[in-house]
Amino acid sequence: MRELQEEINCAHLNVTRLKEEEKKSSEVIWDITKSIADIDKEIDEDTRRIRQLNYQISDLRQRQKDKLTAFGGDRVQNLYRSIERHRNRFQILPIGPIGAHVQLASDSWSVAVDCAFGRLLDAFIVSCHKDSLVLRGCAKQANYHNLQIIIYDFTKPRMDIPIHKLPSTTHPTILSVIHSEIPTILNVLVDQGQAERQVLVRDYEEGKSVAFDQRIQNLKDVFTSDGYRMFSRGSVQTILPPNRKGRAGRLCSSLGERITEMVEEVTGTEQINEERKGQKRNLVIDQGNIESKLRSLKQFLLFHRKEG
Image (cartoon, rainbow, N blue to C red; front, side, top):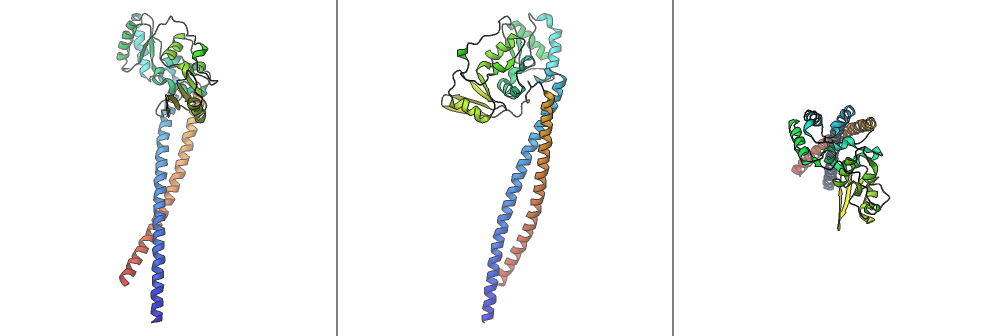
């Protein structure tokens, strides 16, 4: 009788141990499942990033051939041909796209300035309403239906902004880092883009300090070198991320260097993704082994319950 009781106690201990093993195995499987889901998410995010980079690389390589296509795409070429056919109908030939006539003091601000002006860089400038109608007709012929047209006085000299109307900071404004041989271009970027009130900073933390902590007069927006926009309106502080779908640094003059950087980023990201896929394969194998072990444990426990 005593030996039987010992066997029963031993069996109970085994069952308890197996249940604990079952619980631990279930927890491990849950952890592995979560890790696999996290890896899948990272792979998906980086795959999207690779697609975006490849699109931008293709875009930059096209721009190496023709700067005009950076601002409005292939439609700009068709628009130029249409303008040339109708040049005698214009009082003064249009200027544009604006971005094709803008240079930067440093390529480090190319993304920030592009994010600040956006589609304004694609716009054309005409001297009067009549010319705007002629240009609209040319755009229609070129299948460029959403062309932004700005009417501006071409005879107006370059604006001289008084110091007391500029942001009270040592950080550069967009106006201080852009250059154009055409005064009308700069005037439009001030009138339409408020270039003199947009401040540039190197990084995110510096941007928050300038935008929110320093209470700078005449400041409209702060842009970081990688395209974050920060501004304060009353008591509301806003931070907007860069538009990742936009064309990267269209104003950048050293396109070859930018393309090389992007190609290296694609290669590095693809390598990281391959490593993640290897980690995932190993986790799936581990998950299969533990699930097999767990099934055996459950069958064993079920058998013991029936025996009990």
